[in-house]
Image (tube, rainbow, N blue to C red; front, side, top):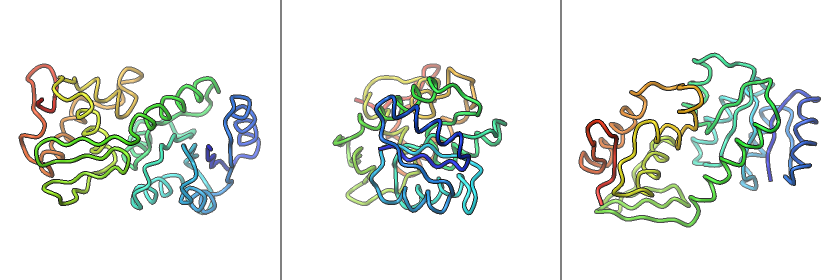
Length: 220
């Protein structure tokens, strides 16, 4: 089930009809308050979220969902395509960002990529040293104590854990976590380094190894 939060009646109708042709089940909300209430129900696989909404804007919805620990994939749809707006949306917890006007084929491709990523994370748990990461519940513990990570910190850790022992470059991490590395170089090279630094502060300096000139890895 897909949740579409979009206040433009024509666009909402067009997206819904197109997705239904692609065998998706869609439920729509026309304002931010209703959209957030529906999103918190937990019955949706993915949210298509407009940024400019009445009653509650998309940024606030995204932040509130993440604050409440809801890790459902969020694809933002907005006419605001400036770099600062896109970075703000992704930092608020969105998983991807699509600028209006867009082709429906690209919308479907991005949705399916997010849904594949989400399905790969279900029912997976890894333990290395004193750290355990549960990909289904998005819970990380160190010495049996819960460690609070941001959505992007968790996504980076999960990606490296799934490729334990293998070096992953900054570009590969950007592409896997933000989905934008090859598309438009939205982030500079410091983005990954900053998030890796946060993870080390929370989990320990030796958890993630830097391979000079190549990238990062979780030691095997």
